[in-house]
Length: 157
Image (tube, rainbow, N blue to C red; front, side, top):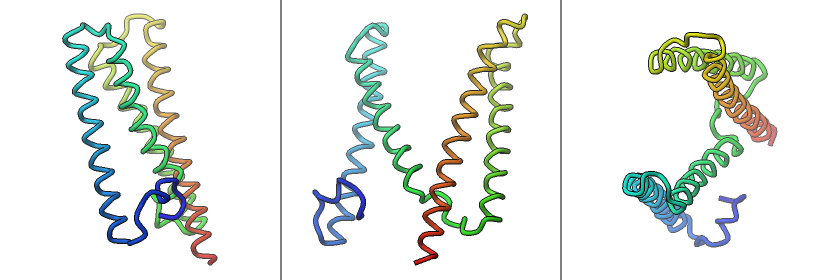
């Protein structure tokens, strides 16, 4: 664990460092679970009008976003991508997965809310589904790009 601010606070012994990381991860999961329960209970009892519930939800969102962002930017997801050919193949797979996700999201929305009766009612679900699929594509593509760069650097050394 070389490139993290957390390494400054961890023991130098590898076994102790690994155990401490497990403890920190466990505490983060417990904290996220407690925040989620707090949000549910707080919004249920106060009918969603509490500022503390909003703060707890933002805290939970921060935990999830931080972990996702660090995972994406670390370049560890696509460990097998080491050649241009494999990179292109994975890029096409990401496009296909994003497109399939978009179609499934539109179908799920139609099943849950019903088929819209006019063109203006279609705009919000279609645009929401499109932006969610686009976000999914950019997250996956960024992860692929970082992984490919990291894998090339490792192979060059």
